[in-house]
Length: 197
Image 1 (cartoon, rainbow, N blue to C red):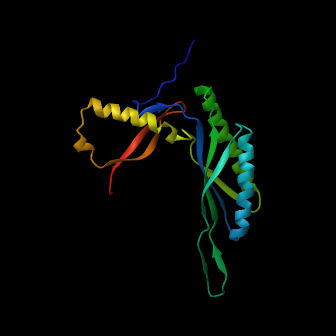
Image 2 (image 1 turned 90 degrees about the vertical axis):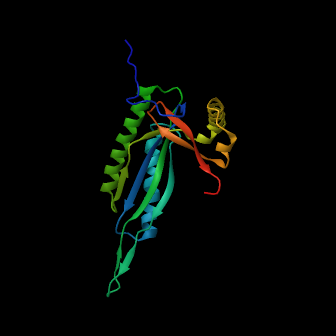
Image 3 (image 1 turned 120 degrees about the horizontal axis):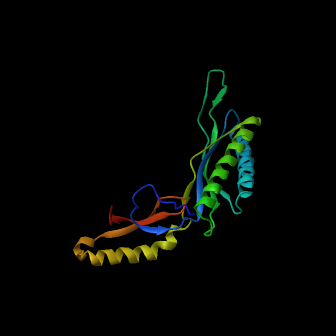
């Protein structure tokens, strides 16, 4: 007996590509500490988190994207009130091409489970680190590698639609855009713009 896994929606436009990385947006916050001390705590927490996730799938990495140092104020007694220091990042876990839907789903579930365990551990330490994350999303690590195929496909579509050269005047390629469909598929399209905009 076989179980077929089908998308629960109509196919998205674009070039179908098998995702090669599972991404999870994370945020880690330390409150009530000086910024330099909070940064050291966040760095240690980030390295430990990557170590735990790497045990699930070798090659995991955390890309630090932004550091929010928070605001502050001083009252008449010159006591500073501090907001938390927050690290925003993207956890990336490689997806081998050989993994089927169920293996990818298992990896995503184990990643979420590991994040939950890490969040509990980090919350218990002093000073506490508050860890939050979004649902894992399967993506293509290097979407630009597919640009030539997308341009070829788009050119063929333009020819078949008999679009005039005047209609294309000033059109520029902006970027390759990813549309996550499932653990097994990402659709890539070209973002188009107009010159001078």
